[in-house]
Length: 171
Figure 1 (cartoon, one colour):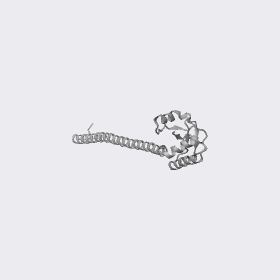
Figure 2: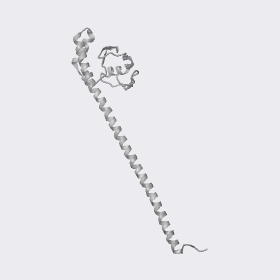
Figure 3: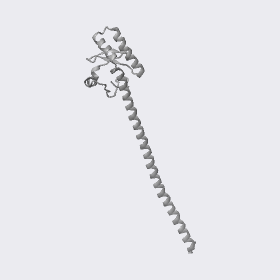
Figure 4: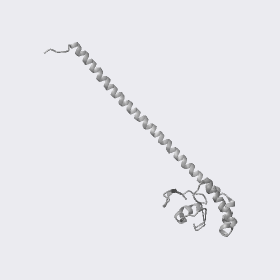
C-alpha cells in the first residue's frame, strides 16, 4: 500500500492541526478567564446595588423615625396644650379645654396623616380620641407607656401588625 500523503504534506497537516488545537485551547482558556472576570464584575455590581439600597432604606427609616419624633414634639413641647390637658383632666366638663385639645390633635392628625390620636390618663384609659375606635387597651402597650413616663420623653415602640387589618402599626 502506498501512502496517500507525501511526507511534506503530513508535516503541513500536522502543523495546521497543532495550530488549530493550540488556538482552540487558547480561545477556551481566554474565554474561561473572561467569563470569570465578568462574573466577578457582575457580582460586585450587584453587591454595590444591594449596599446602596440598604443604605437608602436605613436613611428612609431614620428619616421616618425623626419625623415621628418631630410630630410628637409638636404636642409634647406645647405648654398651652399641656395646660389644656391638665385643665381637662381636673375638670372633664370643660368645653374650652376639650375644644383646644381636640383642635391641636385634629390639626396634627391631618397634617401628619395619622389614622387616630388618643389621649390617655395615668391609668392608661382613653380620655379623648379623634375617631371612634373598636377597642384600645392601653395595657397592651403598658411597658412602652411606662418607659415614656419614666424617661419623661418621647419613645417609639416597635412596629407590630394590627390583629384585624394586618397593617403595620406603632405606639
